[in-house]
Length: 215
Length: 266
Image (cartoon, rainbow over all chains, first blue to last red; front, side):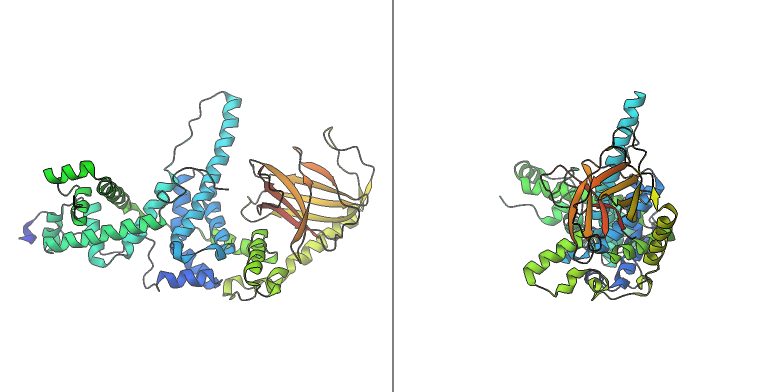
């Protein structure tokens, strides 16, 4: 009966984010080597997470070259401050995004100051383009990374639920996996996403969503 | 009352099923279960927003080149923040002293990869040559066409040493400046394109060997400033001019946020 249902199985077996590199050693190995000053680890971290940092900066800053500057400054600051990175407190990606987030907020503030000056001069209302909240972008990137790391079955079920908006019954029908198994994959996958978000997300931490304490 | 099954919480959060009467009653009174559902729902919303993160574009190559260049430059001189960490590390664990002494040994233990292999010190050589050329051509120069706000007009002065200042760390690269030490013991600073800061700019002389430093003064609103140096200052030792961003925070130490740096030669 599965074959007669309208939903053709999607070709969704590709890793879900560009954050994942094919055969990668465990992330904690990279994090530890990064912290120890292994320059090869800097290049690997950049290859793996440079896109995520650039996405954070690019989606929150209007100016492309600002976004590239922030990406560059993030990796420089991370490398020079690598001793302060504590792998026990979160992932390397989460840490990099935290640095990038602070730099983005600094830029946003600086340009807000500039536009206030402009506004005063021109007596015009400030139509500042409200880009997405940096915290939300960080959170999405962290969840995307975790989704890409989930066991294949869990990831596939969650993608069908998130992206294709299928009910669990529909997922079971489309994939031929028993409903109970679908539910269990989804439950465990959700649990992992939630845990990762609590560790590495921007919003749930003690610094909350406010802009204070970034300098 | 017993909490709801975690599986039920997940499915309620995903809208997969409706809470029955008993569950609704429990949720009305149970903050932890409500919070868990809200969190799971939020995470699911984030998950649904990740679809367009599948194929993020690579950063352009010049970003990586910029990272390498900046890191090389920073390793020529240990950053103040690094120095501070090293100091506190000494206080904690007394590691070998060469950690503190800057120069090549400051990066001892760092495994050099192919792309960050140490460059020859051509930069320093070029800097010296430029400074010498400046000295040769200028020799003496009219100081500062001071525009009202500055100190008293100076007669022609000999330049004992000078340093081009360039953007340091994450400072926008267009920031730059120049420092000159005159034979009357004044330090002339010219700065341009400094990034906006909420506090003020402070000028420091740093001994790159020990990372000891002292404050020379603050910059006013103009692009040029003339600051007195202590008469007995050893410019051979305190050879690095540093302009930092400081906050009004009742902390007189260097903030660690260096905007410009340069090394005095001449």
